[in-house]
Length: 314
Image (tube, rainbow, N blue to C red):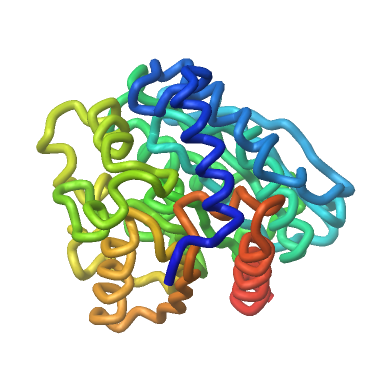
């Protein structure tokens, strides 16, 4: 299927900006420039999300004492007398870009549609913090949610983990490595294998928002050495079979360099007997979930996630 026409028109604007020297390809920018541009893109692609009864800024302590900024979203307020299910969310951005703000609208809508409390975590970014810091931050945030969630009206027995792009990879790290497993892992076009290029990386190497050169730029910033890419916390497709146990919802964009490795991970989970719901969105590119102002599929995908969370956490 061809690229969605609304996304294609947006990408033409992006290319025109590059041709005129107004913007840079992400892999041609500094990390600081790329972070600013990524956050600004949310203002262009998203309608801003839902208004909620309760949004709260938090800090979650990492194991080394570093406070990780986080944001809690609830459509129903919070009460210790009425514990609610919750989702721990990790934003995308290649371990280099992305923030609480870049995914604010997505998390607001997810909280509104699912009825769950959503806790979004700003793990530490590369190249200032390299592998495995982001993975460790994700696990530390999960442990905090188990231990402290009740103080925020969260039921520690009804928890899920979710994320997009490398945030989906971090969600899988939690699912595979935490001592207490989530009931569901939601992976939205995740990185599952940075150890090699799958065919879709070549198929959609440029002109489809996420580019092969940008992927390599991300990985180079996050890794300490090339060997890190073979660690299952970097490439979940290489995980040992016995750790693959948590039911999964996997959402993939057809026109995405990460498409083939996402499908490969779904197949690996299924081969181990893990319950997997796999959804493929034709004509969509990587990051389409932040494009709710451009494409209806973003809202549709959030409904799919909300329904899955309601089933698993009711």
